[in-house]
Figure 1 (cartoon, rainbow, N blue to C red):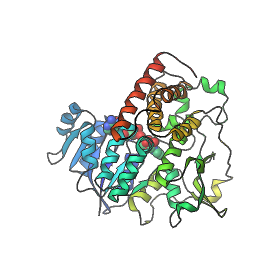
Figure 2 (tube, helix red, strand yellow):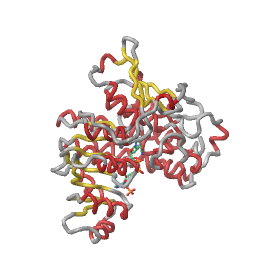
Figure 3 (tube, helix red, strand yellow):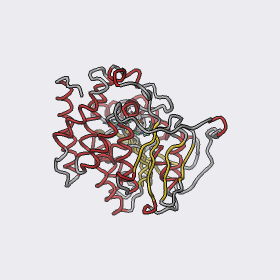
Figure 4 (cartoon, rainbow, N blue to C red):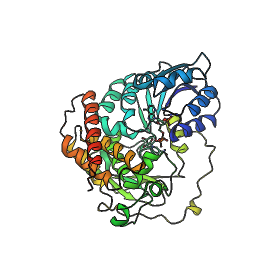
Length: 386
Ligand SMILES: NC(=O)c1ccc[n+]([C@@H]2O[C@H](COP(=O)([O-])OP(=O)(O)OC[C@H]3O[C@@H](n4cnc5c(N)ncnc54)[C@H](OP(=O)(O)O)[C@@H]3O)[C@@H](O)[C@H]2O)c1
């Protein structure tokens, strides 16, 4: 039986992970859960899965939650609580479904402890990929991508060698604003942005999909997961989201992975890896899928994608800076305190100011993240538009 820690268990990836576990009785045992502020859901999950440890964001919530759970379940909180859950001595695999840079330290802690990680939290690799990947290589921990595109690439690359990759093609649905003009985008609302055409996900990644920052973050994530340079990672818009990504090899062959838009597929792949087990989900119907379209991304209307490439080219702390500014700007957009184009403006301002921040240690990265957040807050407060 594989023993799991689930970080971000109350979110979209976390609940899908628990669905997969429930569909495979006897295969998994959950030893630790971590959520943020959704205490009701966390309490329900903890009572059903009876882990040894539960982590929450706030200390005050931890004592409230402990009162609702059997005394055998220990409740911890904050950054230390997340790290403790990530390093749980009994866990074989840590599923990281946290959203944002809060995932950096627990993801690093998990690989540092030699745990395999099923990673959905792309922001951890974007900000601290160099440190996390190097540590995983040193301890032998495997990073199994859950993000559907990288999961597809992982599948395409089984049995292949990295030096025979010509191009990694990340597919992008184009989000809800595909084909919109710049003027229309300038007035776009969070309610419109939250209507993703093909995937049901948490709010932050849904907004990232609408700005194409999600694809930019995924370019950086792919660089660290597969060890290929930015020049060999390209994005193609594929509105149907059926081809989850492709690898083009030096001999001109392309391998793609196709499937339904249901995150339980990549989650199951990561949970059962290296085995493949029968799925209880509906089969994919190729004929019903209809025609598949592919197009170049519109970098004029969606500047975040280029900004992510720029951050990757700058290297060092720049991706962490871009990621942190984006998080602040997305939160502001979601609460109607910023417009659509304030998001790239905040990223650009933070990169201009902090791209060269020290990046020799993981603590440097965390410092750069903090600086970029403050700059993004200041830029948004000053009402600057791109
Ligand atoms: N959802 C998808 O289909 C999908 C697909 C591909 C990749 N991803 C990636 O997977 C990650 C998770 O996305 P999601 O859509 O599942 O997000 P989500 O639904 O917003 O869930 C985020 C999870 O993180 C927890 N969390 C947030 N801040 C925390 C903190 N300070 N301390 C402890 N826990 C905290 C939340 O807890 P509470 O809710 O309890 O506050 C929740 O459990 C993101 O990096 C995203 O880009 C998601």
